[in-house]
Image (cartoon, rainbow, N blue to C red):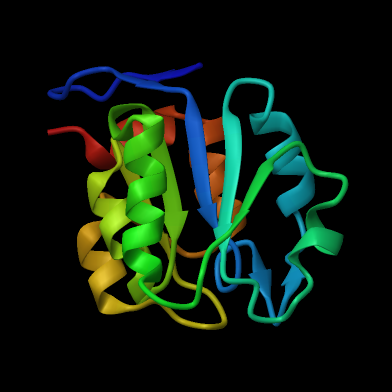
Length: 156
């Protein structure tokens, strides 16, 4: 469990990290530099879930050595599928990271939603639904590895 205390807000007791794949962890189906090491470290305190439609057909190979649970979702109703996954885990215990329009519902439902802006860009709906916008996945994961950064940004 990862406990995050934000001044002026309730303490977050996070047990799940839910990640979008393409545009978030990967670009053109390939995992981005620095992701594996950070995910391995975070897996010591959070259960990691990756949700994807696997557009490039590479997710199983790319995540083979990572301590995470993979859910390949259908091409239809992706936003709803991601939301249902987060709700089933208990959204109040989830931190979600994504960049796409199909991530907006899970970002909004999560105890902590982080949108990332990378090579593929970020859908405005995802940015608006998130609690925080990070310039890249390494920075987003580092917020969880160094939670005082979150406190500095989100305190009221």
